[in-house]
Image 1 (cartoon, one colour):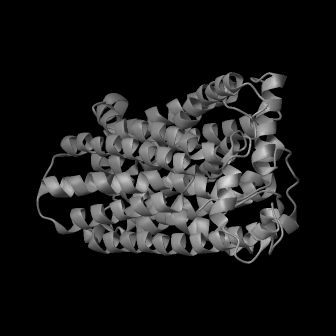
Image 2: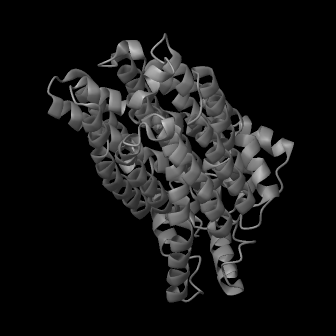
Image 3: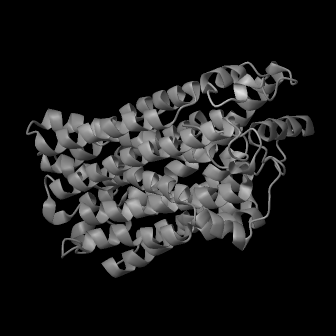
Length: 477
């Protein structure tokens, strides 16, 4: 770079243009070999991970379906705030055990860790089909939270270790879309299960938990057989493919070699405000997603639909969310921008909440549920990619990812406490609380964009050292 370009009137745009013309990190590899390997990775990892996460999401949120299928009457969940307590109590261990789960992940290995999580929550889910009191249901929900706590952060962490930064969101979106599609049709499957009412003396809601719990345990075996480990230890890639994958990661962010997780590193991440900003944004994203998962069926019931109609009408909004999620993920990876596309989805979610809460026509209220689903669903992989793009080193990635997803659990607690049974049928306090989360996320996106842009500018002007202690690293806005 010439001396004139190091002067105080340095033009950032010129530097960015020069960086864009630099050779790609994997330029010395045959592009066909790279493309073929990435496709193999996608097909090997994303379907099984998407399916596992879909089952986790279904097992986590099928409480609302079971409630309308007779559980509320059998377990007397209509008394006081019992339903909200049963919904919320899951999120306490789910939130507290995120960071320990990601630390243990490296010691157990991905396959064993995921298998323990999946089989464990499958057993808890199965047990929910045999409970006799709402207190026993709470115990099963706590166990569900314990085993699911280490699952989702592990999935995100594993995926981000295989790809370059601006390849991540499409992959996260794909496996999340698999979960959206599967979860969207779960009400239909659940409705079919309720038709077993009376078989062997069990009510319809009990069959939902029994069948889904048994299926989850079976998927735990698939996790052991097919789930991917980390790049440096996985056995389904050749040594040539492994070297290429690690070289690409090293060139992109220089953290292909795992570093040890130490107390000092964990504390440094915990004391970094940026780590918590990602967490708060993820909380704001999951809050409406959980609210829809738990309360879409009661909202549809409030419109005058029958139980069977409400269960069936719960599915179509998931189709719209699938299209929206991948569209925004493609735009984000294509433009290498995150904040602007997340903000757009926040506005979509806010619009949907207003339409659902304050219009009177069933058609417009139902359309509002489409918008809420579209806005909230795309933000989940979006925030995870935003966070993953702006950290380096395996230790920081593990802890930051755990913080982010733990805050998502708090979003679940928030959703189940502000969307209250006594506010049926409009749930206006819950709608306003959800909108407040969206506005908070918009504010944090503005703050982070300003901080990241300023740090990038200072680094390009040689006024500070390497960002994230990584030479050549710049934050993704």
